[in-house]
Image (cartoon, rainbow, N blue to C red):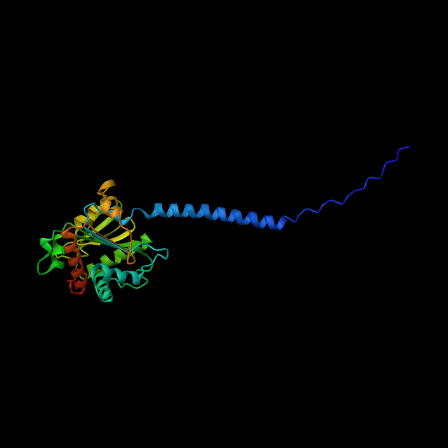
Length: 279
């Protein structure tokens, strides 16, 4: 007679507690993935909205170009600005320029007028000069009359930047100046009706930059987008090889005209407080 041993049932091995740990790990992975996708999408949208850089707007024959690089904070680095003015233009007391800039701006430059739109990117470009014309007794005036100077101020809020320019125009008109408005592309360019040489003779909001210039034709061409493809400063070999320094980025085409233009630009900036304005 065969007997069968009774079946012994072993208790089930306890399963590891996966619920909370796996939920946390899974949630973290999803969050990181969403951040990566979202961050990439945001960066792409930002780059699409930002538009071209200043060198992508400037013609290839730009002789001199200097700029503060954009930063994450989106505000002008004043220490970097002072250092750039000292290192690249030889201005020993940059702080002395600020009252003169406010005088030319007409609109008070407090946070209520600048802080709402001014970004961290500032730039200046010079072209169309020759060395002989800038070697007279007044190189700053010669640069204003014979060269093309463009001052760029990056905008992080175009409607507020447009409001600033509108107030700038109104305040100057109240002082007796008159302007003609020109439509170029999506921009409106205002040009003063006078032959007086001035670094703010023309101004407008172009591709997310508030731009002032002594030359109406230079600003109208910039707004019309007449510079394209390989005809831009950005695509020039000398510029492409340039790397930003501690005080920003500074470019010269290496010509004698560029070096005399640098000296003339320094003289112009130091003479801003003596330039005539309508009262």
